[in-house]
Image (tube, helix red, strand yellow):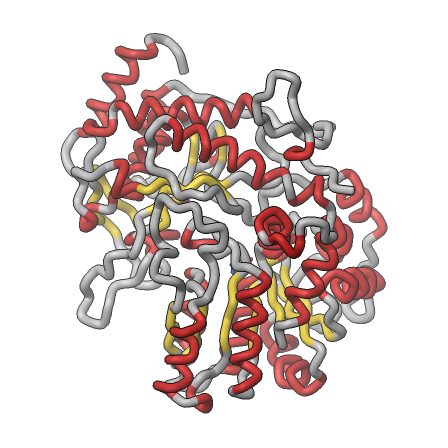
Length: 486
Ligand SMILES: *Cc1c(COP(=O)(O)O)cnc(C)c1O
C-alpha cells in the first residue's frame, strides 16, 4: 500500500502536498529587516555559504545534514555504545546497511567525500578516465587529484531547462560504448552513476538505464560504482515514472539498483538524515583494497570518523529511507514549488526533481553575462529580498582551467534545497511568492566580481562584491512595494 502525500486527494481538487508527520520539536526563526539582510550579504562577500544562520529565515542552502530526524532516530542516540573498537552501535548500523543496500561489507566514513577520497585513491590511476552521468563537486576534485579524468556522458537533452523527460539523469549508452572504444577498457577506471544527479537539478536515472550500463560494464570487465547519496528519491521517481515499478516497494527498488553496482558509496548527511557516510561492496577483494586506507584516514573500522550517536541514528535513518512517507515528502514539496513557479513563467528546471527547486539564472537574468556569475547574483538578490538562502550552482562552483580562465558552467542554477520534512507548506508558498516578485523586478539585479578567490573549491570560501549599486536599487523597490513588511 502506498502511503505518500500524492496519494491523498483534496475535495477542492487542488494538488497540495500534505505533511505526513507532526512537528514535535521546533526551532525559532528570525526574519530580519531588509536593511540588515543587505549588510549581512555584503559582509558575507555575496557568498551565501558565508552567511550566519542567525540572519537567515529559510535556509535552503542544502539538504546536507539538515533533514529533520525522526523521533526514532533521536531516541536511538541514547543507546549509543561508546567504544573505539567493536561498538554495538556499528553492528546495528552494519546490519541496517546490509538490509537496505544488499551489500555485505560496510566501511564507515565521516561523510560522502571521505568515501570519494578512498575510492579515488584505490581505484583510479593517473591517465584513466571515469565516465559518469554527471560529476559532483567533491567527486570531481578527488578524481582529478588522483590523476583521473571525468567524462560526462549524459543525453544531449539532459541539460534542457524545460523538459518533460522523466529520467534526465540517464547515461547515454551510445556515448558509453564510444568511451570504451576510444580509450580501451584498461583506461576506464570504473563507470560512475549518481542517483538523483545533484548538479543538473536532482534528476533521476531509470532502472532500465542502470541495466543497460551494467551490461556494458560487464562486457568490458569494468566496475560500476553507484553514488547513492540521493538514492531514496531516485527510487521514488522510478516508482512514480517507470511503468514496471509502479506497484513495487521502495525497498525492492533500492535493492535492485544496488544489485547492479559493484561498489556503492553514500553521504549519510543526505540519505539517512544524519551525518557520516559509507562504502559498501559484496566483493572481499574490493573491500580489502580499501580497508587499510579507511583506518588511515577515517578511524577504526567500527566508527570511521563518526560519533556512535550518529551511527545509531544512521542505522534507523537508513531503514526509514525505504518508507514512502519519508522519501515522498521532499519531492512533493519541490513539485509544488516548481509547478507554481513554472506557471508564473519563472524559468525553473522541469520536471521537478529531488533535492530542491532549481532556478535557471541565465533565463532569469539574461542581462547578466555569465562572466559576472548570474547564479551567484541571483542567490544574493533572493537573500536580500526574502531572507531565503539558496546555493549557487554555476560558474562560481566550477574550477578555473590550467590557463587560469573561468570555465563557464553548462548551466547557471540557483538551487533552493528542500531538506526532508523541515519546511511547511506556508513557508513553501512564501518562497514561491518572493521568487515571483524578484522575477517581476529582475532587471534591477546586476552581476558580481571577485575580491578574494581561493584556488581550491572557491565557492565555499571566496568573496565577491556587487558590480554597481544594484543591491541599493533592489532594496528601494522592495520597500516601495512592501512598505514595512519584512
Ligand atoms: C553531498 C554529496 C556528496 C558528498 O557528500 P558529503 O557528505 O557532503 O561529503 C557526494 N555525492 C553526492 C551526489 C552528493 O550529493
